[in-house]
Length: 380
Image 1 (cartoon, rainbow, N blue to C red):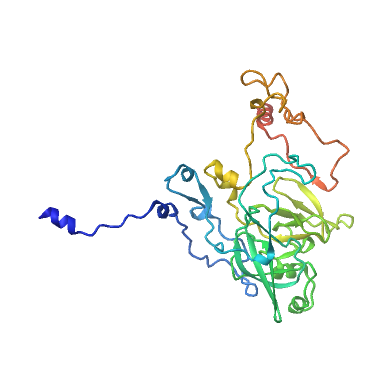
Image 2: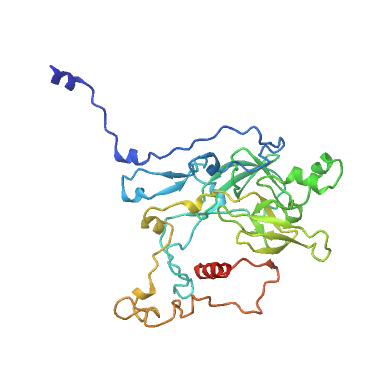
């Protein structure tokens, strides 16, 4: 009788392994909203950056159950806010010649090593100049396979026309926000709101919000910016990768000779002079946890279009200066590249006459193990 009862019980259907592999661990836990964060009513964005996940105990990486060797070490940043559909096709074009393996179009020789293959992709046309004034609505945040930072699709409606553009999204930006560009100057409506007063502090209180693009002379000192330009009226060239930023140190307003340039500190520690009319965007480039990811297997590197790197001592003598011989031997040759140029021991490649006059303070160098050991000996 007991055996019959067990047979009568409904048997649960077994789910496939493919369904289990899609299950993500752990899930994101959002903290409650902070009532102390002041919001701008006109733009609807936060006036200071969002919380950092490390401070609130929120998981920043998504791990997977090790059902396959490729999933065992796979870790990805949690970006559940990204748009799941296809990009806006009029702002994309197919990537031509991505399977040529780093070869040029003239001789067919490899000019860039370790390139080739990769998944089929479309290039997103990103606006790095942002010359169009007026308010733009953030439609959605998307993943761009051609860059590490996320991109935001902006729309601007003028009458019956609706224009679209892509920008590099700052950290914390979400769909529904409004951003604006002030590269063409301060709009008249803002001057009327301020009562016709051109005070730098009052203008910054109305314009210096996350995602807004403006000249460097409008950015308050101490602000965090990204997408920094290097030429007057040109496009953004610095701090475009995921999690990168720069800081405005000084505007040199007291010195009439130096007032044409703004001192900006880069993440490397270098402080350089940049023209006051160059562009900059308030905030930090999105996807700040990109550097924490783990691909999990060698195949994902190939999907990105990156081919393997082979050691010089493993090659033949005709292919590399370190090649040939029996065993792991580089033939009593100093460490050199494949083009027989010295690569280690502090070999200098820049001439003393080639000095960048825009660098105020160069980045700190010689921070290797030997340099740190010498500092310890001097300190002791």
